[in-house]
Length: 96
Image (cartoon, rainbow, N blue to C red; front, side):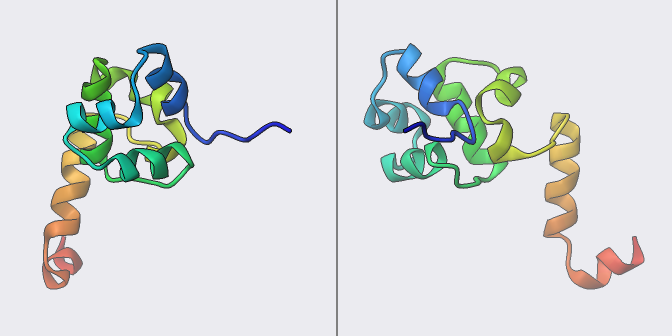
């Protein structure tokens, strides 16, 4: 039986010969979070960034590692804009 992987995190982690616990320590997140993401759960861009850096990759590699987890985020500037838009109160968003 084959399992459907929604991202390549497990493969990239195993290529580095890292356990989930080791990656969690380097990324400063919970091992349970790593497990959930490896099983296809979505995560925040900040968490994805920590994981990518914890693996020793650059942010440009995010599409290869976490493509289905993050969705179509193309640039850091777009991520920043999305965060700003979500952080504004509802009244301000309606004016913008």
